[in-house]
Length: 166
Image 1 (cartoon, rainbow, N blue to C red):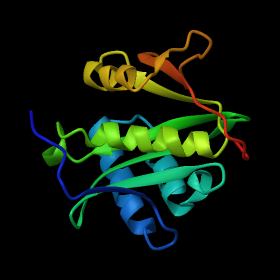
Image 2: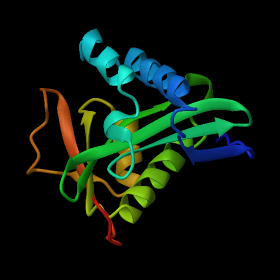
Image 3: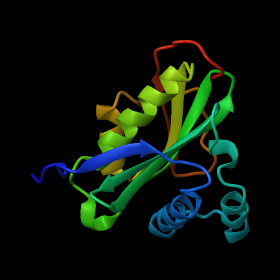
């Protein structure tokens, strides 16, 4: 198994400096995932960055291997006390190096510090690698959550509450 790059750094996006980079990584995610969202929806989200991902209710983390941006993940407020993990993406050449795990760990920690009690996400039923990653990260099926479209599963993880706007 390959190891996490020694020069891996995961940090929060800076606005407006990282706006173009985040937009590019989000576009890479959408292209990779085959997300059925309309191109207009992606354009709207990109034009509003950081939008719903701005503090105090959201966050975008970027992973760098040396100077190269290699991954991204974000959360945004879904409702009081609950945020949604979204846009988890690692560039193909860097997969299998535990970068996604680092991004998920960083997001769950950051969301807990922001006061969120739970984090939810939707994942494709057939995405076994992603579902295994989320299970290892403490996410379990959420029978209360209805997926936004067929073929998706809602997962949930409780977070420690430390106070804040969540």
